Length: 345
Length: 259
Ligand SMILES: Nc1ncnc2c1ncn2[C@@H]1O[C@H](COP(=O)(O)OP(=O)(O)O)[C@@H](O)[C@H]1O
Ligand SMILES: [Mg+2]
Image (cartoon, rainbow over the protein chains, first blue to last red):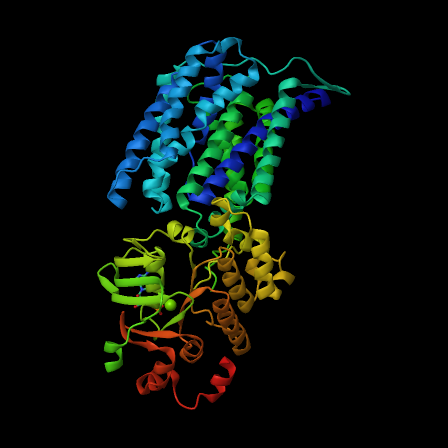
């Protein structure tokens, strides 16, 4: 292996690692705020990539019907819950917007010239289609059992993951898809050329991480999400409702997932079931961070990307094995060093 | 005991009225048909031994626990209160366990106290925070420190300060003097009295009956889940049964500390 190859592998590893880092942060966020291990995270990646590909092929994505269906069910669920709690059916502006939204999208998709749209608009449309699925999933599958033990939440996550893979097959079909690259050429840096997509992925990931950091450190809504993660009862007493926190974190998770999908779709062929293995690598990153520390999780995920790239070169058949074996020493180390901290007072 | 039958809290305008509040943990009733009234600008205290159901009562009023009965706050009735709604309507609880955000700074903790107001479009948290710092200068010195690293007294101040950030109409305090040194207890009670001067109605749960009766206008004695006695705080403080059970004899030293 010479420097040239090492640089190439490094570049590959960084690109994938950046995506894993985003997913690691997202998994961590959802877990700390809602205690849900968000296994369907990967499906949002696949849905994002495949929706983008569908738009570029000029087809109307059938995903919008899933969105409409879930919105209708959520509205009915809200109405029934309202009647149970207050004895009346209540239909507010929030509900009206949520119910109307997918139908506006259906209309838009009919009239827009999908394949000739600028790529930024295609990406925006993809996000508009995929991201609302996050809060809807929370409303329908997790909110009713928000206080259940972690194990129950995990089982629901597994079920939702399996269901979403199936729905993905139904909507997008079994063929893989790749999207057009965001830009041509690349950046010459001495002996190596950084290709344009790598630059896009790295900048976009970095920008998203900085944006998330600012959101959590500087805004009251971000602090409210953190507060829920730190102390659920305390947060409720401040009027931060668990439903709000749950929907907000699922919104962010879906956004990060779909965006990751859009970013990697030009580099990797994505199938309806490709998401799982990708988010699993993000998950390895969050385990390295002990499901607690954001920076360590991000660095861990980056490391996963690099190890994956280099092991693909040296022992390509064992690539996945090597990456997932990585988790064992960290789990061992964690279980040996972590003490169970009792509630204070 | 006659006292308990005749007296009722005859406040001019009630902020909180609890009727027949009943809470059960599984099959065990921890609170049975409790009735209670807090008037505008009043300090009402609930005293009683450990395990009497005081914390249970506050949690049910706030909506943290499911309950039967009726809670009417600020003129409108809640069947089963929900925490977020109660906070929005101006009720705030400083719980027995404080429930601070330990891994966040003192300033962030305070800021989050104003979350519900902020969400409702009222952006006056900067001024409110200055007022809270005026009340607790100590918190201002420690504003960058993590809440988890504060001392017991400071934690209690932060818990009260955080609740005040919501500018509550009714503040419920669950054993604010628990585990604190006498001098700090005195400071806390001074602040409770100061809050009333500023127009906050207070429902105060205490085991430190002496200090509580001294600062309160009206008092309830809770024993094994039901209200055993009630009356104006001064009257109860002179009641032989209360003196024997809750105040003890020769408590002059504590008396002095509590003033
Ligand atoms: N989560 C719970 N589950 C079951 N029993 C409880 C629970 N919390 C409190 N209790 C019981 O309810 C009774 C009242 O408790 P509590 O309201 O904490 O009393 P106090 O605050 O007056 O000391 C006690 O007998 C206590 O053991
Ligand atoms: Mg208690």
